[in-house]
Amino acid sequence: GGDSALAACADPPLHGRMFPYVALAEDKPWQPGPYEGVELKILHKNEATGGVVVLRKFHAGKTIPAHTHPVANEWAWILSGEWEESDVTYTPGTLFFAPKGVQHGPHVGKTEDISLITFDGPLTVA
Image (cartoon, rainbow, N blue to C red):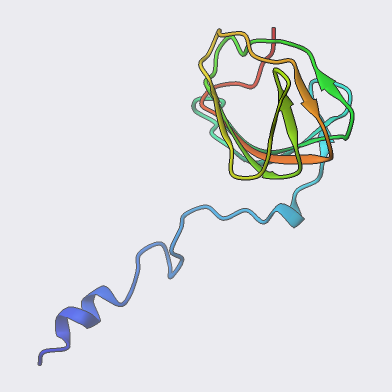
């Protein structure tokens, strides 16, 4: 008798899956990014907002010029490698935030650098 509440919770919704969307990076291709020496894996795109979650790879020694994202806020979390910003080298575990329309960069890939990036609107650069 006492197990009925547990039994009611044991069957998650969404046909047994815990999340309604799952992406494996190994299933997504690297694509050319907006700058030379940058590649992107699009892990998820929100069709309503145009927002994306991507893995971004900077190739070693490449510099991304100062730029803005006119219509999206950006969060970047370094997963591997070293990324230089204003003569300071950042390593895995660093989070960057750039509000939409605010210039940031230049960014320098000290080594090959992979970051998880979220844009809450379309990924455009100016």
